[in-house]
Amino acid sequence: MFYIKIAIIEGEVGETAERNGFKHISGGKIMISSDAFNYINVLNKAAGASWTKNEIIANNIANVDTPHFKRSDMDFESVLAKALNSQHTNNLDKKVKQLPLSRMPYNMYTDYKELAYRYDGNNVDIDIENAYLADNQIKYYTYLNSINQELDRLKMVMNK
Image (cartoon, rainbow, N blue to C red):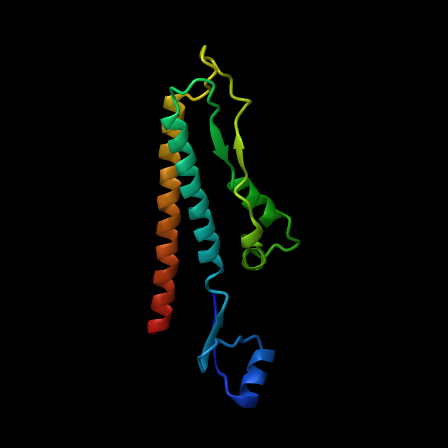
């Protein structure tokens, strides 16, 4: 559940409103301050990470025949899980609100652990990369669908 706070910012009313958690929007008299977008912001960050991972996998597939090429990968899910678990609260809403999304890296790396079973030293397996690609595309579209559902909920609440 989320709440949307609305305040009219003028003179002392504005100062009182700012003390009560409202923020001034430049050029506007009416301001909305809400935690309603916290989940959408996390989903957006996850969708961006998924898009980046899709590009990395596509690059791996494109270099399947490049001698000595080492596959690349990225891991955002464990970074997000670690950030959520490091907070000292059991309230998921508070955990999501306090996430430092702008400082959360995508953790990209070159995979030297994967054995190069080919004579040319390339460690890309086209079948595995295609499976990773399919899995990642499902995640990406799930993130987009979840964002759309959250926005639909906001629209529904605002129309009541």
